[in-house]
Length: 345
Image 1: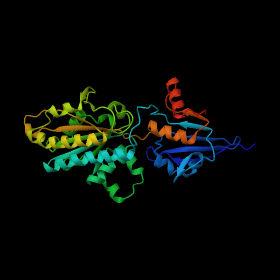
Image 2 (image 1 turned 120 degrees about the vertical axis):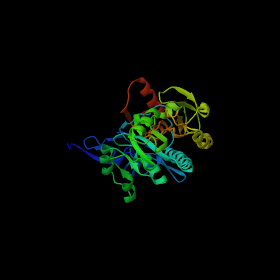
Image 3 (image 1 turned 90 degrees about the vertical axis):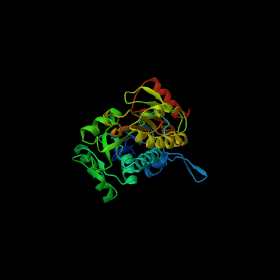
Image 4 (image 1 turned 60 degrees about the horizontal axis):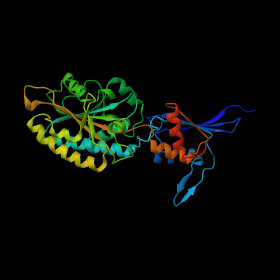
């Protein structure tokens, strides 16, 4: 009897280089898909040609039935909860770019230097800060460890590669800094700018925390446009969005300029409700006009599948058995039953 398996590597749409494994076991003829960490957005799944014969899909006005069936699906269930129906990656990136552009234009109008601070991991979230770098024409600073990882990635253009800088952090121009995710809070941002000698140079720091977990903290359940406008401060305490306008943020000049950003943000936030904005008190200074202000945006940018994407994929594939790769217990089993659309698997 022939032993072994054929394996096909499929783009997992997770961090750069991530793949899913599609096996065909020779001895049994069974098909196994191990997703690993993945983001099963519809557009990304459509590009995976070897997977199409395992999925029921629409083609123009007709339904194309699956030709083969997965026997086992090892599925990334990181966000296997109905409250995590967050927006697509593209929608979140667009919202981040829009917010960053508003902040940048407001700073330029006041002839301020501004630093954008993006949370990241050893690898991951590159699409977000690189999109802002391209849109605003800014350099991207990171430490030597992150730079080594970034150099391993295949960037599309020499222009992208030229944006990446390491070594001494610049204080003479507006730029983007990539830091560990936990360092994106107003207290750490204030300290970071002061320690790097930029307290006098920069008037504004704008942080972005791109993580799917923020969707639950935002209280936005069921997709874009729903939920509350609840905010958190750097210590995690609750605070209503409309209270932010009552705070003193920076100097009198800062308040005048930032009030325009607040108004624009409120209008934009009511349209799509994707980002959550957290404002800070300025760092202490003897000169009110030199005070530094910071703000953090939480962005539900995830490199794992949302609940709605998991449900859509399972409905299309109808695997005989689903094995969750994250979490266990009755709660997950109940959710997996919901994902199966009440069909026997």
